[in-house]
Amino acid sequence: MSYTPHPAATIVIPTYAEIRWPSLVRTVASARSQNVEAAEIVVVVDHNPEFFRRVRRDLPGVTVLENAYAQGVSGNRNTGAFHAQTELIAFLDDDTVADPDWLGRLIKPFEDPQVVGTGGGINPDFEGTRPRWMPEEFLWAVGGSYAGMPTETSPIRNVWSASMVVRREVFAAVGGFRVGFGKLGDRNRPEDTELCLRMSALAGGHWMYVPSATIRHEVPKRA
Image (cartoon, rainbow, N blue to C red; front, side):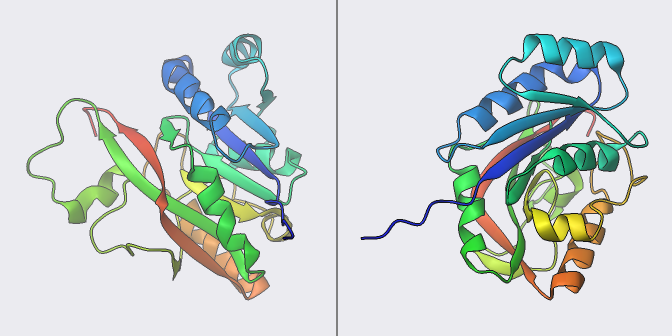
């Protein structure tokens, strides 16, 4: 029986401030614990030299870079993505925890050469109790998957960069994320949809939503 190895992937995690340290540590730990091992884990710090020094000192075994572009989440992600040399690039937010099968499940659809990217299910992890007034249909407002989304792996128009894998060749060809959209910590950022549309248009390919590839996304009480 022949064996086809998984395409190699780099996981990119943007961060920006000391307040994110506890959640960043949890995110990196989950990236390290994937059943399909990432070729490299890259943490990118957004124009904060002091925090950059701490991350580089206290998170051994990961690559730590400074944002090479204008301040903001797009530049952070691009810095890590353009550093990567693997066929695939995975993105996590610094306030997420990925399930052990997350990366493997998001890589699987790339067996189809027409797939330019994938995205997974996002489960809001509320600090305290979830508001009783918030129905499943409104979970998008706190960066979560919501009622009405596909329940099995399906083509989709766009995914969220908190849980995303892209084909590096296509990502690079469109120039990555548009620098200047939003900042780290914002939710429902437009750079996600905009990137998905450009990558699909260039390659004539499509995105796949994989709801079983789940992460938990922290939702503070102020959300």
